Length: 393
Image (cartoon, rainbow, N blue to C red; front, side, top):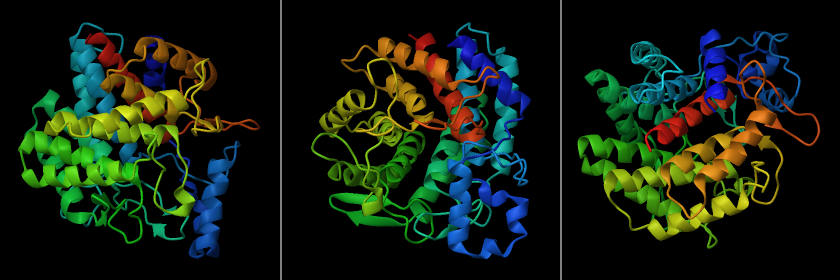
């Protein structure tokens, strides 16, 4: 694992943490010159064409490599873990001085990528995104997902640097969740909206990531509003949980699937809620979800499945998110054995000899394009967190 992470680190540093994204098709300078940019169905088709194609047309159609705010947040969190690893004596990824410099540089870069026009700190993506339901997220529209990962990284960076301005920005991001996101009453609790825009308030994992960030914010501030809202979001998600422990992705008919890494998001968020608030009322429901996760999303040979009832496409997020779940939860499963099998399969089948990780493997033509946020930043974040877990035992 050390060699694999080192190769990934070297690749990402050589690229300056810039890269392409599965959803960045509308950044094409060619597309922007056409009248198609004004047509929602054309925008949707263009994005999906880029996302689904195993051939990378981005250089030809002039899609630039750029910094993605969430990607930078993931890298920042990862370097914080590598710093902790170095303090434990493992210097394969750099000295504490070198890694501290990286943390400071990435913190500054992340703050420069904040979404403008909001009173509280928040982050989005560096591209326009035409949603499936035909509404447009302009570039840098803040989302709870991006904001959670970015602010969580700032909390980590504060712990290492002692820079109070990073803590202020992270707490401000908690206020974004509490004050700027819409929330919908749902059964016993609430669901946070995905963004401040209308019509995107149906996704469990997005709402739970809001609860995760509020829970961390409560840990640092003891702000009772953060705790109350986090609890309501957890209650909303738990009340929507299936009897077998699973969750569908969202409430809409077109969101009625059950997948691996979003289930993992839910579990990770619930872990932080418990740890930061001290509320273990939902422990049994979480345990049921954890059992469902392990029993339905991994084959015996280590292959990570995408769906509970279907293996393909095998997405790099699936093995990556497993590492976070393994870090945070004590279970009846042999954690080291599971990690060894899945990581071994992933390194063999999804890591390029140049160090980066592939996006998706399919039955037919696989997408082996290097995506900085989706594939590389997320694997860097996951592997560094899990390695810190191992070196702290």
